[in-house]
Length: 490
Image (tube, rainbow, N blue to C red):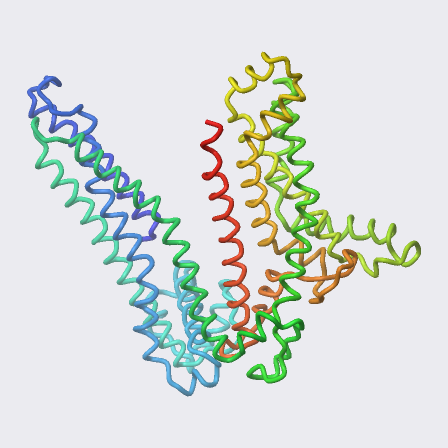
């Protein structure tokens, strides 16, 4: 049974458990709600959560763990010769999973029955052609070893899904039964439910921390491996980025300074565009605009935040770049050699960040107490003087935090840079030169077949770790500024 259907059945059981728990509580109180320790709904919620939460937890762990278990189980059927021929065990297992999914699809569409799918042989059947008839495209012929592993993977996956269904629904039923049996008029259902909800909220809040730890761990091991193969000093202080892909990084120059310079240069131009426009628009919308104008202008401004970054990249490539080239190109002042440049990406990225700066600044300005405005106006200050001398100083810590968060967003942008700034890694002060950033090079280093034993591929993880540390530092600095100075104005 698919995971979604199992989850839906568990939800149905929890609804039934809610009704049973509530009914059991009312029966134990002889129908008089005054005899209950808690309100009847708490008894129903207790029964529902007691069955649903453990079932969903087991379902999530099983869904994540089953593919790993199957891969470890089936990988023993793959010979070393086939691994050497294919290139890696991961590529072989990818073919195994693709063939197994193709057999399942063939059975589902009636192209072959389940018994045939489990016993088919390549010397009797053209498996690649049979699977191609049902829309499963395979890049190469299927070997008998791959087919046998796929059949085992398919059989074990089917058994695992069946066992998962039984276990998850059994846990849901057992939890609901236990909760209903201990339900009585004196049971402290409200205390139990509130304690359980508190732990659920703690678990939800912990996801952000665990995600950060997971990102860090996913980067750190490959970063350490990269620095074993390539000197850290050459990486952090090198001024040339020139990967050669000729093996083991013997002639590669992987200095990160040109990439960091391009990243900060483009981000600086983006902030120079986004901060004034975003801040001024926030001041206008919060202090000067009428409610009718604000109700129209604010949603229109925030529409920019919903535009995909690839669309901004196309706008930079097809519109902004050619426009700047006509103004600053060879036919005029000769500063710009092509449409892709730091200025192109910076201007478009700044437009993308305008709603980010505007929305955060607008919320921060609106959070300034009205009493401060009234006090300033009462002392004879004009509206503009109140904005300059009272509201903006009071909101300044939050505005600075918003700007730093926008900076971290600009540093992590990829698609606008790829399409608007070019791919040249250089140290230049000319904003009309083509440059590139850390994120763009991470994409290029991992595009295509990557040999993760070479510095040219592993350097992507070192670049990612560098970017992770920079953006994390900006976010921490923004939170520190907001918390440090916010108390003065409350």
